[in-house]
Length: 139
Image (tube, rainbow, N blue to C red; front, side):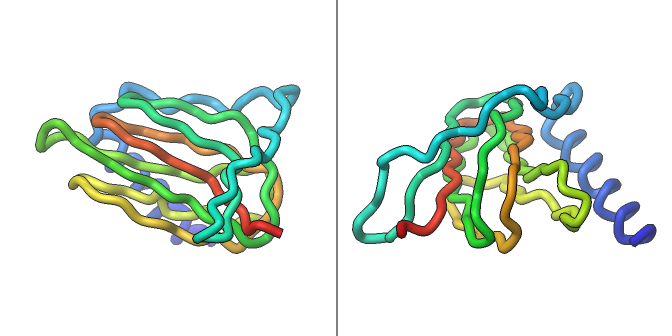
């Protein structure tokens, strides 16, 4: 794990520097509650939106609870060539393998599927307009 951790950490630092972020935020306090899944269900997709964040700057989301199958849907609209978006899922779970951050430097959208459940939050590092949704399967 040592070598992989070093590579992931270096990648993270390079992307942070490339986005022009001043510093990464700390994890949200443990006392903060989870996001309660909303009633936003897309009948055509079969997914429920657990949390949605929009903005143009770096932020740390509140904690949210997800099952073992979930996804991150994002849209990004940079206003200059130097804009970028990085989404870094974080958790306190000791069994969670660190993920490489999801990055974008051009306008677009995508969906990334994750297969680890539990309590998470997102570290969002951005310059440029973004919308990010965390979704779970409708049951």
